Image 1 (cartoon, rainbow, N blue to C red):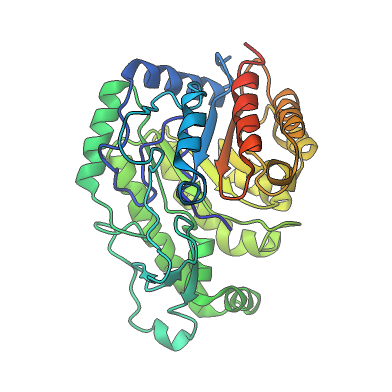
Image 2: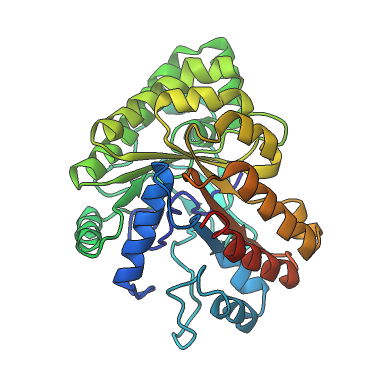
Length: 384
């Protein structure tokens, strides 16, 4: 499961998954941002965008793995993907969110979950589940949504300031719940096996815990709506390599109602509802769309390009997560070019309905990184 901050990925990258904007890291070209935002909205609404919105995100761990000059050189030579890149700026670009875990430095979130990582820049795993024993549930409380996103501090005054700036510059006002906001939070609190047994046994305490987590999430959603959010993200990994982590029956019984209640206020406010999930989510797709998802970010090869075409093309906007497991790591530049072309031709159209993102992590050959950037820039204009 990848919790690296991909939830805020709509063609402009200044928002932190923790809700606190990292000031001063990106200098915005206002005219360009407005044009990008309009293109994204046209893609979402099938309103003939000028090109397919493309995001190439360089994960923080990559800056520890690759020569910095090599990455900066690739960014400088691909201005369509990195329009705000300034080679003379100090420090590393693309650090648009904070990974709270550091190797050897466990992090305890507002729920009491202890997170640890072994790689700088990669979100870790929960190594202590505070409700592994139900005896700890008495007196257990959620974080304070006034000050905590569930995975770190949130400054709502700063969010409001950022939204005002966004409105003044034609930048979309993007907000969202933390990655893993409901199902994965329940896993973090109880442990995966415990949670599934709770669901199968329908432990009465589980209903109370779900209500507690959902109530916290609802407060975060309301905060964003009150501030005038336009695009709400609901990121949560539900899939594995060959299917979801939870059966459709258990999903519909315990998770789907909460999704519906959390997404409905955003829909009522006229927000675009964006959902991210890693892994194969075939049996859950119709349920997610019924919940109100308008833009679905899902992985390409694990779900299958032809399956995505048959199920989603023309139905909702596809925010395609380009393969990080197979071709981009172990394939050739020619295979990578063919992959991006196939995805654009099968899933895109002149009307719109397609966006694409690639997240770079360590161990991808630099020749393949260049091939990806080249292909994303080339085929972004396939229908133009």
